[in-house]
Image (tube, rainbow over the protein chains, first blue to last red):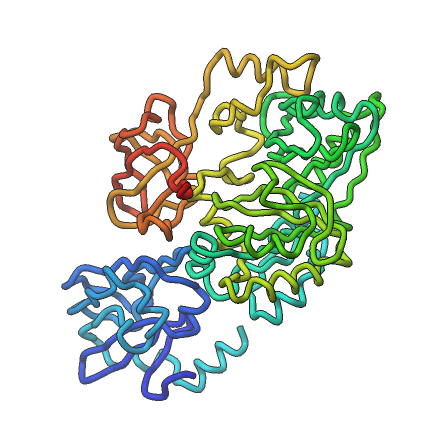
Length: 126
Length: 370
């Protein structure tokens, strides 16, 4: 089930854009592949990130995985709830399990992201 | 490793794992279930109830003959001749230079009959090494790895689930004991051994009987919360219990002393054994490195291969690490310079680009309530 109102990366992040604010998380597909998520390393507020550069780290019991920024911009908020409840990435990846909010600097970059249909196709190929 | 070039093997229970929706991975030349419902849930099931494992990838080597005990005494670091019938011992097979070829459990099934259980990835190498070392002894080696399935039931409720299904009286079985009998109506060897830190049993059956034993245990255990458990939770369970894993804590560059397992090197036993001279020297010289437990006191998880520091100096490397599901803290095992191995020593693990504090603690991290 891929939400239709979001855009996606090939690395399985999702992004919801409201004005120039982008909320970022990982997809349910990514969460399931990682297994039980036990730790999320969040970026500092104010950090400038480039599109597709690492912006955080997600650790499951088994593995370590980078979180990549779907767009360039400045980190304006992170989900503090994940400090004590990293499992939200497994249980509500598209909702309470959001990870970071980025003030995006170039909305033209959104064109490099995948739409819901293209993303769904990607997960079915895998 | 020769096996990497060959197609991976499937256990007789592969169809069950698929039907249960397990995620399958290749491990030691076999296709094995990594997880079913999830590593944390499976881990907790074993700590509080019971878990069922397919361990059919392990190697089972049978030795029989008047000199079986003497031959194993020459091939291994322990003294299997000292074992009573129906008892087992943890053992090692070492290279002539004292490095570890594999860790093993040796079961004495009869005066002149033993079963040696080896890790899947080493089963071929152990079989070859045993065959070479047994030359000249009156003993026959029978590698029954592919004909033998192994199903383990582990956890505080394991005994209660198994007892009505077998005639071996599992409650009377000693820890590290083994008995021959029936489970679910099929011939089985039932051992009170495991790799989880819990009470539990390992059930060796013919591959043709594995499906029946698995199904009957699953059905009987359902009301007691028995869950199928994959290799993912097997790893977190053994790590909490401070048990080493070949390829992580054990390998050809490590002696049993360095792994904290000097108790399995019986230097005083009668006769020569492979690796004796090197291990005597290692015992005298003292270890070059020492296996320790670490609890990470900062944020992050120390993982296999991460470097360990004391101040600016690199003093070791992490061999295994995870977030302990039971303790809720990041735990790890690491090899460090012996001078830094004392409990309470504060070291640092390099986690990505950060030095994160970690405290040396005694192993194991978890001991089951008694």
